[in-house]
Image 1 (cartoon, rainbow, N blue to C red):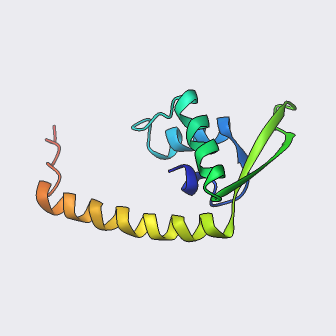
Image 2 (cartoon, helix red, strand yellow; image 1 turned 180 degrees about the horizontal axis):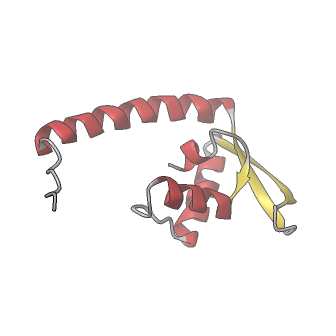
Image 3 (spheres, helix red, strand yellow; image 1 turned 90 degrees about the vertical axis):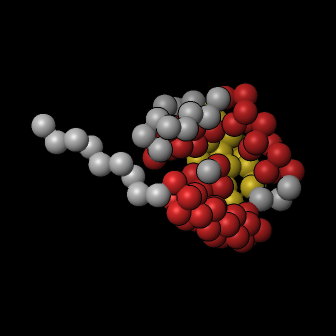
Length: 101
């Protein structure tokens, strides 16, 4: 999800966490400690680069961007997650319908 959050362009950690929360309708909430651990790990793996900048709130922030390797890994992982999600949907069957009033 972190890689996908940065797919559209560079952003800082708070914006990444906000994107995940909003995109998943609050189903996934990334805790700050876990997020920054993940960002640093992805940077060490060569999937992200970072640089200091100024946020929309006019505060100093570290901005992360996908590298070419990060884009490739995102494509591979996204395809794998899609296959897994489709398999789970097959196992779980159709979503239950809401009763109408």
